Image 1: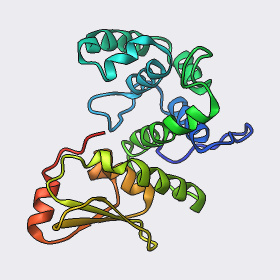
Image 2 (image 1 turned 45 degrees about the vertical axis):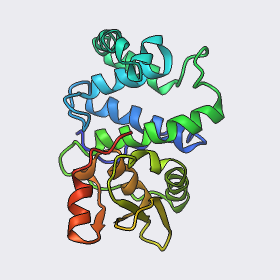
Image 3 (image 1 turned 60 degrees about the vertical axis):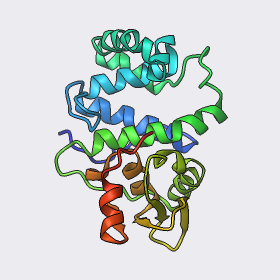
Length: 222
């Protein structure tokens, strides 16, 4: 029976958070099949798996950032999504191909920690009766460090200041302004909130009413 719980593997546990998330996501894809919903717009699991494979190993991935190439990107992604799903999942599980700039271990950890975590949750939290995972303190701290380094980019369009509170006393200001809102939650939940998954993230927003209203109108950008 398929559900949104974390699937466990009998294989050796991958050594980095990004690789562990990749393996868990691959197992979840196998459990759910190609036609399950995700939180990524209208994408099904086959579409999301195709996006991840394309991103790591095809030049059409340039369309993610270069608008004139979007049609090419969409064409290649659709082609990948129509491939046999087990083969597509195997390509994802095996990681970036040998020629990919994302292949080196340090690059994979730097660029895929967020990608694999967020998209793993995109699949988990789109399923019925999902529940937040109990991540280890080490993994939460890893996500908190990533937030410290990159979260300013996510809220660059906010007209008010933004403070992050990690529920255990850690606090960072990611956008400075005399009027600010505070987002409180575990680092994993804050990460999902800032990636536009507000309706599926356990985060509280506090501040004066006007600031909250202005902030919640903002389209968070990743």
